[in-house]
Image (cartoon, rainbow, N blue to C red; front, side, top):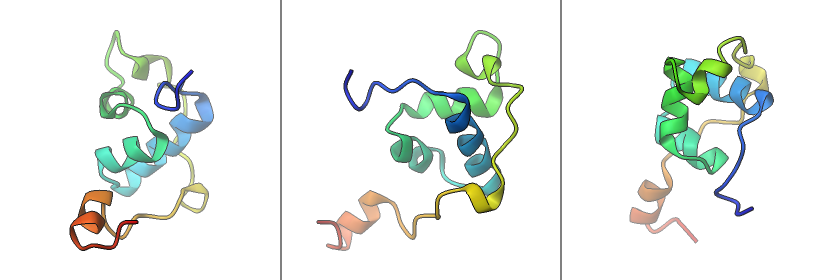
Length: 84
């Protein structure tokens, strides 16, 4: 399995929901977990027929459990010459 082929588990969904609630950018959340941004949208909307529907029962992680927010996107850091 490649690193970009990740399964989403309940713990990840709790973190994703917490990051959404905090106001993190969808693409930043997807990049953090190395998953497709569409999966974040599915979890946000819990629409029928999506992966989000099966995670509807999971509550968002608490603020203190979330990873720190990014000061800038990877693209912004690269533009400023601050990316390795």
